[in-house]
Image 1: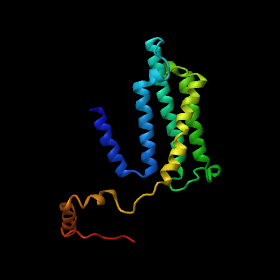
Image 2: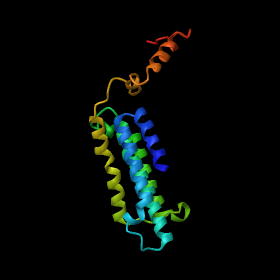
Image 3: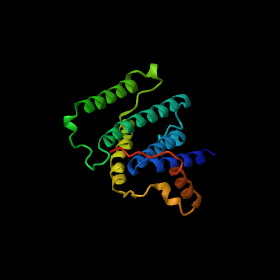
Image 4: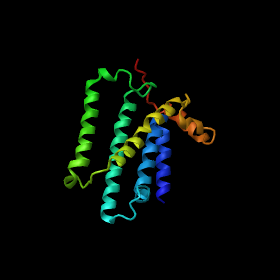
Length: 182
C-alpha cells in the first residue's frame, strides 16, 4: 500500500517538474527510504545497542538529507545551465547561506546532541553522507541532458480521452475572454 502512494507521488511529480528536479526528488526519496528501512543493515549496526543504533541511523539520515539539500541548492542556482558554478564567486549571499547551513549542521550533529537527539558521526559516516549528497551534481547534469518535449505532458493523452479536447474547447466559449498580456 505504501508503494502505491509513492508511485502516485512520483507520477504527479514527474508531470510537474523538469527532468533534473524529478531525478533529484526521486534520488533523495530513494536514498532516504532505503536508509530508513534498511539503514541498520547497511550501516552494520545490527549488533549494536538497539537504542543507540536507531539514534545513529536517524542522525545519519538527517545529515544525509541536509547535505543533499545543500548540494541541490547549487543545482537550483542555475537550472538551465550545465555549469552550476558559473558566477558563484560573485554571489556572496549564496556563499554565506551555504556556509551557515554547513556550519550549523556540523554544530547540530557534533555538539548539540542532547538538544536535537542526535549523536556524533564518525568521519567515515560523514564521508558517506557527503558522497551520497555529491551524487546529486552528476545526476542533475544527466537530467539537464534529457530532452524535454515541447508538447505538455497531458496533451499526449488527448488520443485516449477524446472528451478532454471537447471539454477544453468548451471552456473557451464559456463567455470568459482570455486576455493576453504583452
